[in-house]
Image (cartoon, rainbow, N blue to C red; front, side, top):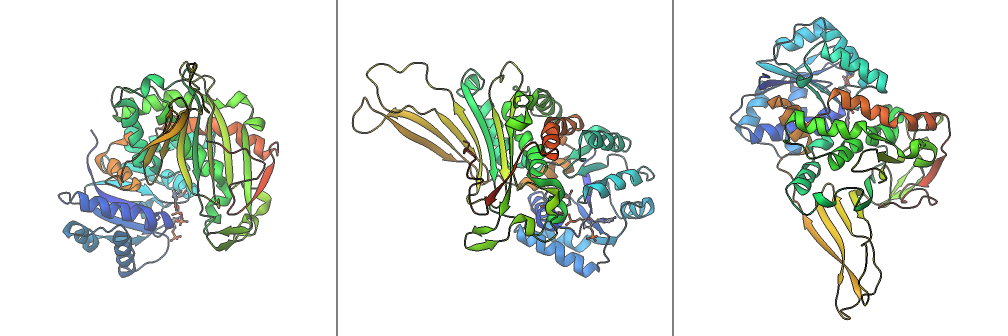
Length: 458
Ligand code: NDP
């Protein structure tokens, strides 16, 4: 059985992910679980003094509003070591600073994570060590398979956490409650009653100085290949008997194995765009191709949209369109489930019948159900009405939820190895078609809602 983790060892502790997302979530988790004695060890290639490190950790904790005696104890005990994480001797030195069972969090560029895993083969890992690997996991199906083989030389699968913080988002967890703790949705949750599903994650944020990573990834890999396919899996999976790691991840894996590009034709089922100069909320933005560190020749897309089909009894024929992009005029993060039209409208009722639509908004979490009812005035006239509810924020941030899984040795909210490979298999035809220039790279003005010729979805 996996032991509870007592030291979080962050490799890449001086990076953006560690400062902005990981350490704030860790601080929040420590505050929530004051009875547990946990330690934090940071490692980066730069020389940092202990004072500089403590200041950085304190700032991250403060950003999450984390305080109290347990948080102060972590701050007093934390250490930073300058190390080359691809060197086994340096990794041994880092592990010597860990107390109890360690969780090694690879907050590193993906290529360095792969080298660090290779180096760990020469290191004695304490029993129960958890490995937490960030996305993207590999760069294609083959490299993901090779990385899986590599990490499984180090620890068993249930000690590997391939992080997808979307699975820690309360909306995704709310989906489980909505689907399986109510009688009214699940009987309608199939091709018989649902016409289409759209999963949209449009951001107003542009590149924000992250060219080093993003220019080689793009919206398809950064968002659809990793996060949005996980959301699709939770939305479309069969009801698991439990939400433990095996049942939940088996159900997700089954549905992802059945998922493929609509009509097996990426040229008609995918679209890509790249932002041009524009303005968002009064802030002027340069064209993506002119952003610092961008190589325009890579033709990296900043907006991607792909339609998939799930080839099984429940979903055959229902288009699932996943879209995500940067520098868009409106921040839109939602799952849109559009139901089929009613089979028959009794004679005597009139008005425009729109499909029933269920919307699940992400961050802040909310839902709305758009219905046709007999509204005010003429009782024979059909009107549109919306029932809405706010879910309220989760107790922990998404990364806090993910880290609590790492600390408890519970991988339910992380991506299993076979699923990571499947997600690359699913998008591979799109990547190939885009590389071969079989799909145009459309321009859109930053601050607009995408290329003007694209038909809106959802
Ligand atoms: P950064 O480039 O900001 O940070 C990378 C870190 O790795 C730095 O601390 C760097 O240390 C360290 N590093 C690189 N090479 C070595 C080495 N040989 N030995 C020791 N340390 C090394 O990247 P991010 O923090 O943005 O991303 C890290 C990972 O998290 C990536 O896989 C990314 O895809 C993922 N991710 C990032 C998100 C984000 O918002 N930033 C969101 C979701 C996932 P130094 O600076 O000292 O060289």
